[in-house]
Length: 409
Image (tube, rainbow, N blue to C red; front, side, top):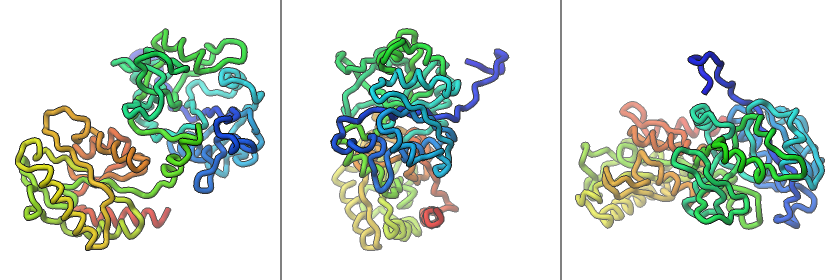
């Protein structure tokens, strides 16, 4: 890795995103008869606009679009990019060109390090976290991989324990595949030298060479990705891009007074609302926020309470919130003990990902409010913004600040 120690300057953070957007989109016919698939609209905006907005917000100020099918539709809409806060360049090749041919034609326009995206996948991510991983891995390419533990799609690769991609199978036929390449790849320009002559697939020809040399690393995410790849995906992508504002809430210490360490609220008789909490939930509900509670409840594993006791407490909680004019949309809880090694007990982010899947959330846009370091660590692991409730800052204070910010956006 380059560093001051070996006398070389560390690489500069890239500012260019390269987006492949040239295919015919035949799986989306008849929607793509008169427009490329990234121009399919959701809530009045084309899918590609959401991608460009995302990379802009992550610090990329230049976008290179590689076009083929109906390029004028995209160029007329986006122009030079100034309307969207970026500078956009275009390389247009034949409509029947494969991805490798498009990338090879664009070599002179591509920066030494660049972010590579497919035009039909949207993956919520933190570029700061990705850049840190890139600098640690010291590989030619770091590609975002959806873990696919829920079999959301067909896998096409295998990731080793050290983060190297051991197998890449574009045809998705090899047994044992687990995880799928979804683009969002940080790469050095020199990988383009691996593209062979002819009208070839970039992924099918370059990725296996990188795998063979140990130069393709995985940036693994459990956050679902959303796409315009086929008709079946459009309804969930529509719900995802609706972006209903959502707040995730810890329970004990945020909604109610926390019991002493090692003790638990075992019944509703032991519940005490924190001052202002019900007002905060009402205000957020009134402004259209979805409210989701995420709580560790190891008292169940320790047998000081039962899951039936917890359900009764939560039924009363919901009733009080409703009586105050608010609404709790869902409550996720971990019943496991401190040392069981589950994926749901905070600081693990499992419950956040469960909420993400159930409600088609973009966790990078969902504020998580907690009172404990474990809450903060779970939020960080899921790339979720976080804020603490403290003795000086109540949930009501945070809610008012959040609503004021939303009103000014």
